[in-house]
Length: 600
Image: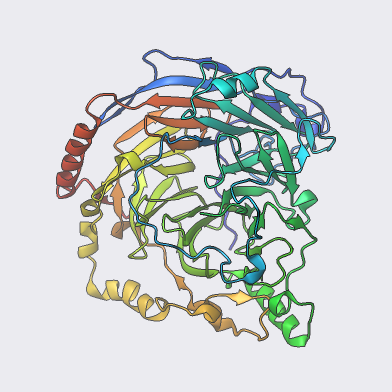
């Protein structure tokens, strides 16, 4: 039975890509400057703790397509207009001082780092451990065809010397441009630097919080061409990783530094691969390992095991195919490890606060929870409908929140390994979800979501609110046993390391039924799942919202066409109002503010 994919969002492409570029012609559009406005009384956000006031609307300049840019082809058969290779404007915020550190809810014990037991990954001894290694090439003087040009601010040196060390830098990607901004400056619309790329759009990026200092910031960017840029803005140096897709030739959809690591980062590719790279290693043409410990020995058994793994992955039975393990002795070149999760796109992933677990959301509609240190899948959850797009962890690591193509935000309990609520309020795909750590405590949680419906929604929930709806208690015991009991007996068995995964370097074939030992959770019926309404819903722009961030003094969003909006938090009585709101929230839990979804 053929099932049509979800329809594309009802929104046209940015004007710079709406004509001309579709047939390979250059668009006659002049590059413009950033524009900032300060709306007075416009778009306030009203929540229980007070009113969030819109302070700034910073509109980033959309660069025109490069004359040599390839024609835009949309893989979606339902799309009616060409789509540029972009996922919208994403922001990374960093302060080299002590500003804006979120409150800590979890004591992270001395955790095992990724690959700690592999001597081939031991860090080399250096004379000065505090001296950071920088990328090789000067991006301003680069002759690479990958970089079109770099625009720097003439006063950048003076601005960097005179700025407040606790001020906030912002890095933003918008189509084929990547901008470096100083949000603590009075001229925050004047970028410190702008990089324009030739044939690739930057889709994602991340900042290394471990290595940052007043003179050094490590940034990795993932592109639509699959290439990854390691960029250090202070020195304007860069290195190109996965050049021309030598390791994976698929677009990089999401990228993050490994928690606590100075050199390693993880990239998700659109072909369903998760790859761990080391910024300081050279690349080499990647071939899946077919023998133990990365040796070149092969025989019929090894080939049969690899063939069985490939067939299982194609059939969708294998939750994790390890094409290179972090335990491999061959660690002279990238990748450090490479895992195949599916044949569909990986939209996003998030590391847990305990620095051990990984939540991954995919286009196939699954949320996969991993122990990434052991390279194991723990649980697979499914969306109500369509793919899952965004994911985040609560500050204490107890809950995972996802947003997807079913227009729903879903709350999953990690300790209980189950869905606890669906959140209904969006009218289109949910592009980003994020917790507000400054409004979370041991009893209540605040998170927000944004989407293609141009809305920003805020949600509050407490542990007491997430009880089973009344409809659950009215289900007959026979029906309940058939749905839950039998499933638990057959699938809720924790698989060991050999049943849970399949290494491509295994020396044995794997029976088909061994792939079924993973904990695969069925879709919870609507009538048996709590429904959580938002506490605030607001249309905040005219183009889809693609990113959401909470800071100590503000809420920030960014949109597809480059609008970065900042709302100041309520200035007076934040703590008192929060306590009052928490009390009201807890009392409303018994009043049925969370209700069952209708079965229709």
